[in-house]
Amino acid sequence: MNRIGFGTDIHRLVAGRPLILGGVQIESDLGGDGHSDADVLMHAAADAVLGALALGDLGTHFPNDDERWRNAASSQFLSYAVDLIRERGYAVANIDSVIDLEAPKLRPHIDAMRANLATALLIDIDQVSVKAKTGEKVDAVGTRAAVRAQAIVLVRKI
Ligand SMILES: [Zn+2]
Image (tube, rainbow, N blue to C red; front, top):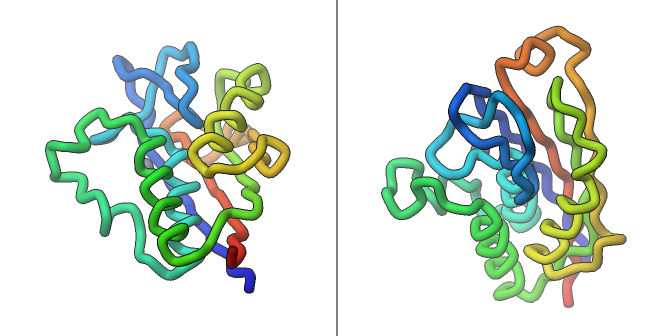
């Protein structure tokens, strides 16, 4: 039996914070604001995995007023979500995702992000798709006010 999950996330971009996407730190004058490392791709992926089995969302499992998660590496949120579905007899089949960021260009970092997601999801890199788009200079992404990510995950009974 297959099930599908969807996740989306957005963080404000601010000066003085690192830009971390898919577990990769990217050279940038602006970084994601937030309680954890503000990794929108990891957060969207974790929400997608949780959503596939209707297990709530990231905020349910990791309240952002909990000091334990301050500046936490978000790969641990994704690993936690994967543990929850594996306890229920499911594994991830594949993931597709999109990052919306005006600058810098993400192409040089895509394969490193795919590798990090594959590790956390316990799947091969060829089961992981990461795409990058700009905001065409409009809306919160296009004006560099925010970075956004969306992910969709198929899980299968094992
Ligand atoms: Zn987030």
